[in-house]
Length: 261
Length: 304
Image 1 (tube, rainbow over the protein chains, first blue to last red):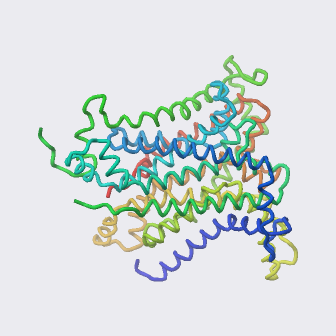
Image 2: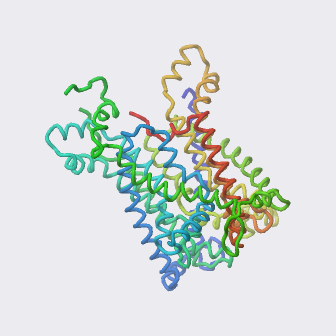
């Protein structure tokens, strides 16, 4: 760029936007530490709301459900995503397939939630963890697919060929050559899928039936007014997600340098 | 067996083995995902379209086929909501594009790799961390005892708390932008990243000044990204209900809220009709985007 001040302006500009976007999340954490519970930032921080979280049985059950579905989603989407991303290379109609895979992102959550309720009733899976898990998979799979596609694109296929040439069978080449090289991406994808599932709200809200996950528990409070423990829980989820995101970002771009032959 | 040596690219080296026998076809891996998507994404949407022509039947629905649901939508109280949603969507998308473009430019051309990774991850946060939590936070921030008013009064800008921050159109726009700005940033950034840098050099060689290059080279090549960004925002806003619920209160409903109300009253055919309209609109956008702007190219990783 020709002018140094243009770069500076852009830096400041981008950081300003970032601040605007991140402010609410950090503000929540700030509120959750306030002793009055009225939504102010105080000078006397306290952890008592976080302590109270653990006394609430509904909350703990919701947490259990969120975690279980999160893990299930993580396992299923990463496996399916990886298999699909590896096969994508050999596909003929690539652009059509990508649009097909990315489609769910473009359908508003409410529409999907609504149509899944009726559909599940049809299939007799309504309510319950299976429904939530399927809905989460639908939401998360497109992202994981793209993420793994990007990871695989930095994998040098010559290395696989070399392994095969040296006598490795196909599964051996995968396990001993490919997997270690993409392990960072796989871990990143796992983290990402778990975080996405943990924070998913609207589709869960529709298909959950009588169960509740953490996010839908929070949603219940919109209508009934706020309670200070809500801020603590939101703060917890935010912190957790932030940590996982940092991890995923780091893993996406670092990793064993691919060696060129 | 003759080995093709003309290229060592991905597809070149490996594709020669792609079509062996059906048992070892290498693109079979797309089957599980495709099956899942077809089963849980495509079929339900088609069913929704079908149901929009059904009639209400107690708490469920059944044929005969009718168009009355669509008629109801265009009746008096529903139309203003649709129009308002479209207005909000257009304005928000416009603002988001204007705000996101310089930032996307920054990421593509100014930031170094480390900054990119860190800042991009930071930008993903609002999108991933539950929008619900953030909207709650915004409500707290914009309220009479919130931080904005505290600062404003502390600095002496106003004597009393500013009332119009919350429960107005302003707060909805703020909330929507906070939720969906990353959506508009990423496609534009992807598009800009994918532009071959040598085109800029070529343009300069041919005598183009900086501004000229920007308008005639960079901008047209960024259009797939801009279109996708608009698409993301539009669709998201049309499905949004949390923002208007949390930040705007009773009067200013969007299509999302309307849909929720309809579902609450178990009028599934009507809900199907509204959903079908939204879906059709989205399909139309995607098709237009692919035909005119080749948006699928954004999602494929760049070949190194």
